[in-house]
Each structure stands twice: as C-alpha cells, then as structure tokens.
Image (cartoon, rainbow, N blue to C red):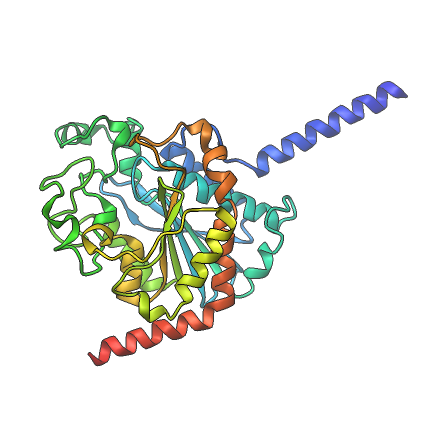
Amino acid sequence: MIKSLFFAFILLNVFCLFSQDISYVIEDDEKYKCSMILEDLDYLSKKYDNYVFPMQIGYSEFGIPLKVVRIGRKQKSKYSILMVGNIHAREDYSSKLVMKFMNLYLMSINGESNLYPNAKLYLDSLDIYIFPLANPDGLKIAHEDWEGIEKHRYDVCNMIIKETFAEWKANGKGIDLNDSFDDGNHHVKHGGKGEETPASEDFKGNYPAEPIETQYIQKFVQSLRPLMTISYHTKGDLVYWADAKTHEMFDGLDTEINNKVLEVSGFEEVGVSQNPETYGCGLENYVRAKMGLPGSCVELSKSDNNRKQYADSLFNKLVWSKSKQIPMVYIKEVFLRKKKILSISKSFTLNKSEN
C-alpha cells in the first residue's frame, strides 16, 4: 500500500512538472535566439488559441517574417495597446521580457498562474498586441547566427563594426531602426555626429523610414492606432516617457502613467526629453508626434560601462525581478484611461487637419 502511494505521488509530481513545462516555455537562462522567439510565439499562439491571434505585418530586409500576436477576445476591440521588443539587435532581454510576460499573462488567464490575477478582465475592452522581434536580422547578426542569412554575411562584415558583432544595434542593412522613424526629427538626429554610412550603430539612414522594418511598423501602428505603444530596450532601469514637443498636449496623463510604472519598478525618474538630437526618431516619438498617442521607451537592466547586454543567465535577476509588473501597469492604466487617451488623440488629429 505504501509503495503504491509512493508510486502515485511520484507520477503526480512528474505530471505536474510536465504540465508546467508545456505551459511555461520561455528559456530564462539561455541566449534568446531568433528561431527560439518565433518558435515560442507560434507555440503559445496554438496552445492558447482562444485568446491569441497571430498575424504577420511584413518581412525584414533579409526576408524574415515580422510576427505580431493579438491577445484578446475573438471579436477585436476598438481599443488596444502595443508592446515591442528587440528594435535594437543586441537587446534580446527586451524580447524575453515581452515573451515571458505574454506566457505568464496567458497562464494567468487560464488559471495556471496567479501572477496577473485580473488578466482576463482587461480583455473585455482592450486588445494587447505583442511584437517581440522587430529586428530579426540584427538579432541574428548580434548572435553570429548566420543560418538562413549566409548570402548577406559579406555585406554585413564590410560595414563599420564598432567592437564586435555582440554589440550590433542596427538592422541587417546597417541602419539603426530607433533612429529611423519619421517623427519630423530625422534632419537633426545626432546633430551631425552619427555615422554617415551603414554601420553596426549610429547610422540613421539617408532619409526617414528608410528601413523596410520601419516602414512596416509605421504602417501597422497607423492602421491599428494603439492607445499606447511601449518599446523595450536596454540598459538603464529607466523610462523615456515624454518629449518637449508633445508633452503638453497629454495634459498630465503621460506623467500619471509613468509615475505608476516607477512605483512598481523602482526605476530612476527621468525628466521630459528636451533635445531631438538625442531623443528623436524612436518609435515612441513617432506615435506621439504623428498620432497624438502616448508612447514610452523602457530601458531594462542597470547601466554599466559595457556596451554588450548582460549575460543571459542574469535576466531574471536584473530584468524580471524589477520589470515583471511594468507591462501590467501599462495595460491597467490604458484600460482605465482609454476614453481620455482617445479624446486627446482626436483633438490632436483635428488640430492637425485645421493647420
């Protein structure tokens, strides 16, 4: 009898471990390669198909699909929020953050985790769009993962490379995506101090929205019009949440949302960005300047003197421990303030058309 009970106990534990494994799939301590991100995204889309609706918004310069998922009810909501990772190649902590959040959010909806207890509630009137890999070509270069992009290797190796491939920030064509969005500041970005030809970083392109990835992302956000866009990066443990040109029109709303984020993360407070030479042409700047919608750039993990990302094994310690509630705060605040955000954006659009 005792042996039978012991055997049953072992089987139950094995079953629980197996169930946990197939529910939670993010590789916390491993290098989060392009193929792993796309595989995890596909797996979660199939496992939670009642709530996850995948789509493809385009292709990278090297032909890798740009995949986005919508988390929500079967019927699309008119309100949405967008979270984007890996605009900068070497910063796959950002992909891991949004993917781990997505995984545990879905588990919370399904009763498999209690981390986000109100997860299902927000889907009543808000869709969550997750775009974990905005720069797949750059990520593959940063990881020296040449499989499938071998024919581009010669051109990549002949660009200006600062230090090693591990520090690569740009896309596959050597343009920094976060310097390329058409927010009206392309002519002043870097103040003439950036690279003038394709490079691993600091080349903004010859004209606004030159990279194909930037074009697809701009087209997507213009069509979707998410009430807020959050772009995740590294490093700093801080948030760039406002700029001098657009801050006033949000009438304190951006300040209130940012303060909530600082409360749960303990991140350093940053003032309103003043100089477009340094802040311009990011995705968060684009949605503010072109659509009158709030956008933030979240810098994950503490600053140091090393331009490389920290070791993959430190993700939970340096990122997840501080940032696991940040996406949830944005969702909650947008959910509560959706009508005010929409009103601000409508006024912005009306004023723009009159001028």
